[in-house]
Image 1 (cartoon, rainbow, N blue to C red):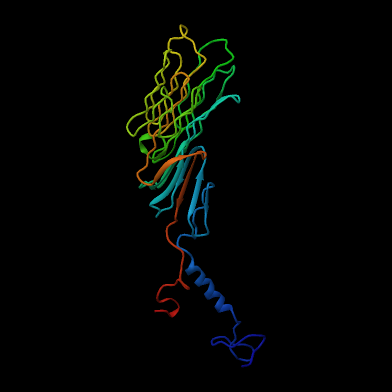
Image 2 (cartoon, rainbow, N blue to C red):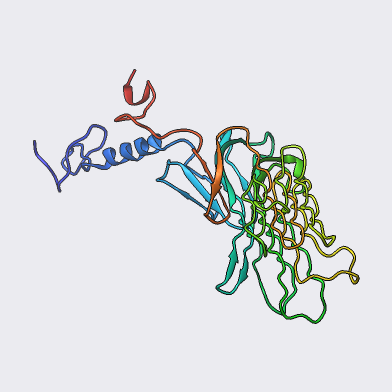
Length: 328
């Protein structure tokens, strides 16, 4: 077959000698572009960018979003009905007395489960716990601060002029997922926090009471944990309540009675753990899940959400519907 300027003949167009010509690849390239558009995974064109906390395994893979202490909101794409969640609650603060005495706070819960995306809004609100504040023996009588999202605050030592105060540590906060950012009753999954440590011992782990006889009790599914009872000087810990750990005990009849000690705070949760009495540790808060697994962990507070985007990538050699390009 003759050619002219590298062109091949095609019906409907005439070259200089009256023969029809076309350039190889032009029609093919156009077909490839059309085919490429047809092979696109549904939903990829114009998809909203992922939040900064999220990564995706490939253009069509599972999305994983990881959040640290604070409040967050995640709006899911249409078509995502459920997400898989791993939530970790906060650890109770530790009581530190140099190299001679160290009592650690209770560890937070880890909860794995499935959460339904709320109808209408498609937005989940995430509140990630903070750890309870540590305390040290010394001239500072400041109580241990409760961790973010419900950790109970420790009590205050009451004995003016001392330089050997031994305040209890703060309880750890809870990590939760809720459908309304301001409504505790809308929480659908909760990883509780541990109780704070104290002069006399370690704090209770999430979902567990203080190991001490006079420490705070664990929160339950229906009520806050009871506060620890004081042995001699009146200074009971306060009970936990919905979402919040109990405050640690302080001397009740100051200045008649004085003490360098105070109780530790309870952990946050569905219901908070009780605060410890004078010198005693706090109880852990209670967790909430409808399915899945829950236990305790030394890992720091976080919430991790995974979901598969709607639609699925093409898996065959070609992904074109019947009737296209003459197929049937």
